Length: 183
Image (cartoon, rainbow, N blue to C red; front, side, top):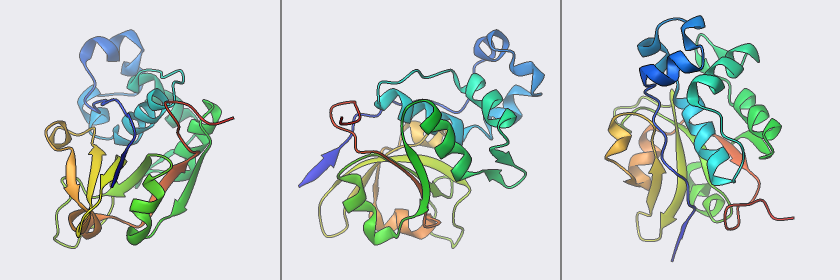
């Protein structure tokens, strides 16, 4: 058995044209902000999956900063959930145990906090990616959308590898059925 939600890929690396067009220069250096844009790229992917208005990553960065969803330690999960809700996709920041990820993916994609490139060296969290589905098995495969450069070529990760760097924190969303929230 498997379940996959159609979540388009977005990159956190912001192109110069987008940065200039949407006034990103007001925030500072494009490359520095690109390195901190995983939360807003993940939010954009969720909005697109649910068929909602999806501003550019630059516009979402500016909005996230204005709404104080970014701290020196990173993106506040509750802040991202509030932004998603404001765009019509009810979201909630909550702990989700690793052994509950597969069952939670049956209804909706999740934004999960992992360490970039999902290492098994004891580091946990700090990078936000989309868990968009799973393939059942003894070590279920989690289907991901990772906005980092590494994620552009990695879309399938065994649950055991996710578990090694997963913080246990997620942003959950209303059920997704064929690109929409059920009535």
